[in-house]
Length: 197
Image (cartoon, rainbow, N blue to C red; front, top):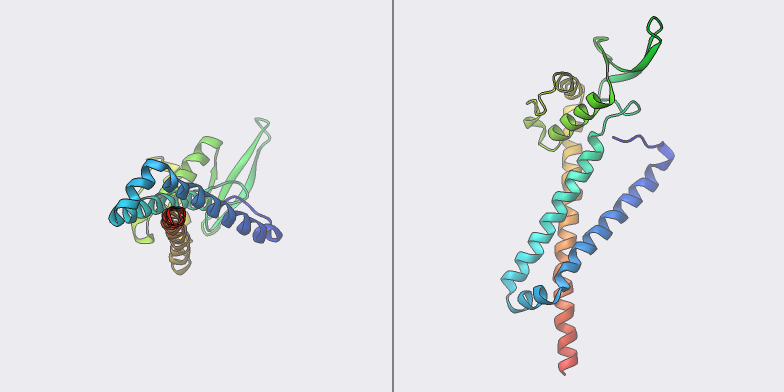
């Protein structure tokens, strides 16, 4: 997860909600494209299918985007139960970042490529329900090892709550999109009825 200052969390949440609303609205505008609108007007089943399809697209994109953000790993946002540190090698005049397992003291001096693998591994696990997160998806030994440490230190109750929160936000975005699609088509029908009258 990208690090956010505590006093900026409220602003970040408002901006994230605004972005989701704008994205949902923009996707729903597909319903007012004339050929699509004409087909949807003639058949309520097709109208419902269009609303469900666009809603599902938004739901999926929102879930992936939120999960990607939550799984992002950096020096400021290490995995659960892991601390960040600096490794100094005075003999070779080198330094770098490392992760330290809070329980065992195990260290991992990572580089940017390895960190990307860890972020990807965490994303692929977080995209699944907690009971399906034990498998290694990237085949990167260290990424899988530290993703395991992450899950071991992730409170079970909190893990489920976080998953369902992301799922509910995504479903809410999808339902809002479906509703807007339906309203776009209905409003066009109402406008045409007024013009015909």
